[in-house]
Length: 452
Image (tube, rainbow, N blue to C red; front, top):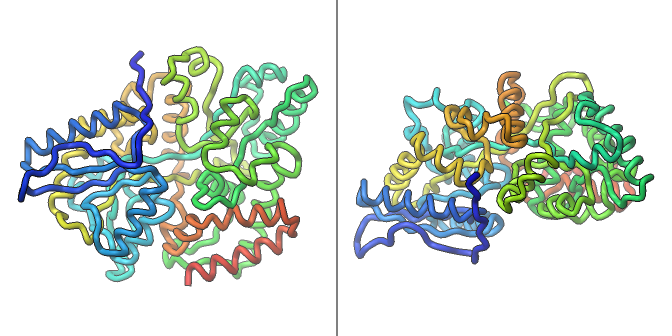
């Protein structure tokens, strides 16, 4: 099996063909890749694009956090790259940029090809422009991620259970891990918690707020008018739903099911705890945790000891709505070469290039192009992780339960995600011992302020 080599990069690297004096060029900022093969692909793509169009490619990589900071500053100053890709633009920035008329409509790039894409991927890059009052495609979607779980199969077996014993109903699922599995492992002398779930107020903590959005969906909380973008925080049923979701989510902490440190976790800490086998199960948005074993050539752990699965049914017994994060490439309206940027993205968007990108990035997102998601890379049942991810996405797609981030409807919530008011509220409940209802009321006041 082909191995992919992970990269450790400085904050910025360049790829492609540098522009000769006065030669037309496109400038690209890109979240730094995890793999050397992804960098090599982008370099070759830049060279091929230049050879075909005569347009040079000048591109740099930055860390995920730097991409947000730098791109936000550049858009604010009106001095931007022609193309930008940030893995968390979807949840923290793009809907607000589009609403403020700061992004280019990319609909023409896929004109006539819409049926080739998974509909939720296109929906996940379609935002309202507050100036024109119209919705349009303000990003080119590379793919999407849904929340899934990774768990240790041997630890489950050490507790006396098999995969077939894992319940599919909401309360039974959590009681199984927090009660049955954790209790038996701890009684056997293991210093372990069943679940690794961040509950941190850490800014940009998507591993806190993304699964919490799934929690709200599970409890059926309809708190946004998706047509108007107005928050329905005055509805008593919405307040009750938030209280139930917070009680259950933070209840994992109060019942001792998660490590004490989860209130300070960053997005990387569940990875560390999982690798150290300090937790049995963790919610993730991608296969980055288990891919590490495949990258290291540890086939035993990847294929036989770790597993991936979807969420249990919601408390009402129906499939839970899963909140997707769409990874999209954007073109700022202040870009110096908008037409060149569109040409590059159009070049990138071919099935051949999208399929290759999927392979060299090791399936970090489920592809937006439907045909790429049906290749053996995903459909080979011998791979317990990619196949489970494929099944999870296809099941969600078939049952129409792929949900968009709330800031897609209320752009002011982009700031709520960046600020991570969701995790800060968990801190009030867990650390400050504030009654859940009072903490929710403070949250509602902040959400109201952010969405004025």
